[in-house]
Image (cartoon, rainbow, N blue to C red; front, top):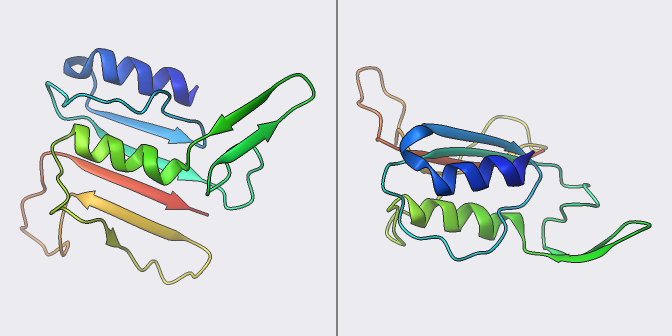
Length: 126
């Protein structure tokens, strides 16, 4: 599911406003700048054996693969949307230490009347 959503959005960004994925991987890390912005929310579990936070080898009964750290995939997605290294991700305090969130783009403060950015990328660990 996640890989297909990522692939479709990469190949046809003019048809997609946003992608939401649970675990899953982006695939090859070479992303070109999107022709149209595509927001992303990527949620991972910190105990997921098939999507380890640090990346690494994942094994099932039939296959062994090497995965990238999901944080790298999300950073690549932010760059493909034109969010540069100057747009460092912001940590978001949700009042629950079990949930971590990094965010690129979007609202800085969430103040009423503030205009949202054209694109937002979020990485959430639960």
